[in-house]
Length: 200
Image (cartoon, rainbow, N blue to C red; front, side, top):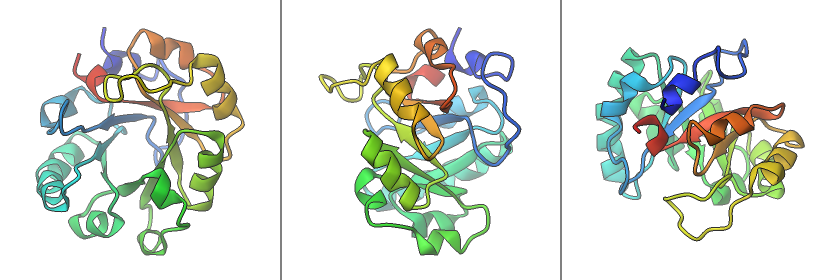
């Protein structure tokens, strides 16, 4: 069973908030550069965060993915560039920790229902995400991750402790699989984010 099956309302914590996605797919230039083949497996109401270090390539990817994702009822966020996200008709932007430290995105808030998520690796980063106006924060890494081999992971207990004290809804990221995701169904955990688990 893959993560998409676990993500169904019967298997996860059902909430009545259509604006905030519970499930996220992140792209990765090495592991999943183009998410098109995975979009149909995502639960409706989920979101895709497009990431690419080259702004021109990010724009090309966004133009290709946004209309397809919208047909499947998915939101699309662009990492690191709110201005580009607004211009291309994306649903939001994803901020790095460094970007969140700079404060609120006034440009983004000028667009109604523009979704802002922020990366976080600590309790302090979650507070910074809140001050930046983030609607959700992706807290990572929960488990050992292929994307960041050797990086220190939070582990379930520490992750839950940080998430439950967060001023902003927290989405779990980092080494998420359909097996270990079951251990994260707890108060304070809004949803799940992954790369390969949606495809496997």
